Image 1 (cartoon, protein in one colour):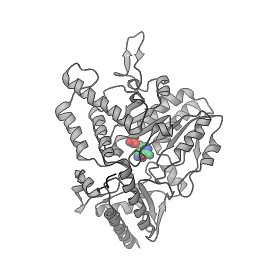
Image 2 (tube, helix red, strand yellow):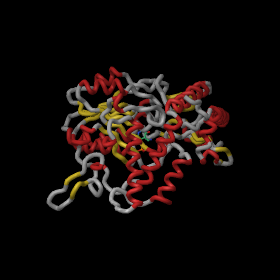
Image 3 (cartoon, helix red, strand yellow):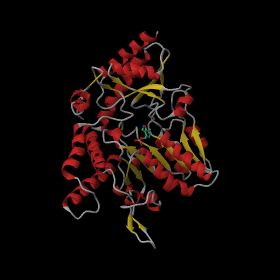
Length: 407
Ligand code: PMP
């Protein structure tokens, strides 16, 4: 494998040249949304500038040409996740829509009052609220795997929650609030022993590790384009063919039908059945380019680079007096979440911003995690493939400044 040359890689991201409050931008908020390389920006622009038409219905050259490009992304995503067939790849607006689609089309018809859905205590709101909505409708209940002090979960706690009434398990692969990598392969095996299907929320996993849905044997997998250096508002859902085939449509409209009449409408086969309406065409094409870009750098090399940043940041932040890290599980990726004795996370974020350092402060759309650790919010620095140790140094310097200001 070639060495990961971060200085070279940074040249691919034009935004990294800009200044914020007169300081060079230090972007440590990729878990919220990652920056875009020139190849992605150019692909989206070229889609509109040179190739644009509607897809799937045109007899003219532009439409046919763009349809081919669009459908090629399905193969790109298939290969990215190592799905068995590109028919198992549904384009969505993002991870959120993927979870909602599975909740509506797969889980809802299987639920009766008193049935159970298992999630963990570290889910993003997008993997909590759709299940609560189903619960309100059907009387099903949510069971929550408790989070340990280090931000991990225990397999035995998960296993203890699996019951006769468990109908579905939906688990975050990598936590956006704590960085924890969950033991999903083992969880899936335990659920499958009881014939319970499993969805993985991979929004924070796919940017940081290679994912093989067949090896994991998950039933569904969702992610968002914008966290893997692609456009926002697009993403993908992987679903095993055997499930997708039996699922009713999510949205009704154009593109998802075989034929329509007022007497009888026939739905298209998956994945088109789940793709009603004109999609974010150029967004999907941009996502395909982003995936190709990420893979061209080598996912193993990217993961090793980011792991180095995580270890380095953890070590340096641990030395700051009055700073407490949340989420110290041995299996971790992408983020350092912390609080300081002296300052509220929002104040930390504001002061860092003045030094050009972008972090996130808040509940990270994971309020139950905040409740679990009895904090109102955390400050979170998250790493992308373009970050450097020098940027971690700047973060530490700025946090020292915060300490002096508030001491
Ligand atoms: N799950 C996790 C773990 C996330 O971090 C996010 C985005 N913060 C989502 C789901 C939702 O992704 P999106 O908003 O792109 O649908």
